[in-house]
Image 1 (cartoon, one colour):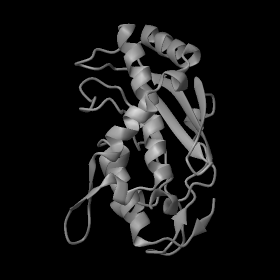
Image 2 (cartoon, helix red, strand yellow; image 1 turned 90 degrees about the vertical axis):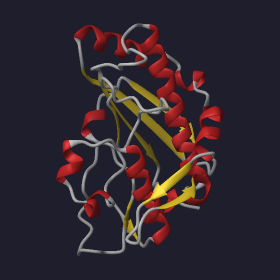
Image 3 (cartoon, one colour; image 1 turned 45 degrees about the horizontal axis):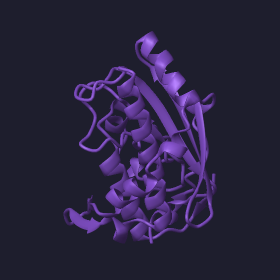
Amino acid sequence: MTTEPHDADSDRAMNALLDESAPPTPLAEAVSDSSLREMVRGAEWNARRGRRQATPRALVIGTVVALALGGTGAAAAATLSGWQPYVANPDSVVHFTLPSGRECELRSVVREGDPEDIKEAQDVFRTTDVLALADIDGELARIVARDVTVRGDDGDTVVPATELYSEDELYRQAVVGAITNVVWDELEDRGVVDPVTGSDLSTGSQDDCAQFTQADLTQ
């Protein structure tokens, strides 16, 4: 794990990404905001009853590991790279390339749920060519059109996503979101997930882009 200097823009981007993506979890409540801002990027999808958001993007910042970066307030950014244990034996592995040419890998695994639902979900992940079916351009258009709320000491600020996030980060979000939509739609078609009430099924995903740092989040 490496650290390097970072600036306020990358802090704002990381804070916004955590705020807009992470649902309340016991882990999030147990860790201070300052620690959350210095955490490794993880992604966990909890397709739990009633928790689907207005948009079907359900891969969120959820599985996090605090980093020991030295003294309090140290100006450092963790390299957002390194696999978490829960994706050691994934049900699905997808490779994609960011606009900069950086290679990424997305791993997904079925974690909890009714045994029959788990079996169906594993089959979806293992047999569906999710990247071929993913509407990345459509998801990217939705992402770049939205505004992002950034928390700050002087209050919240609303900025266009294109002003906050880098081209690589916007595309990464689009790929992950589009793949999530494919999986969700397939699970709906199989009756595993209800379009209104959701499901008790829980899956986890994490993407890793080679040496992607906090500074790479921003323009």
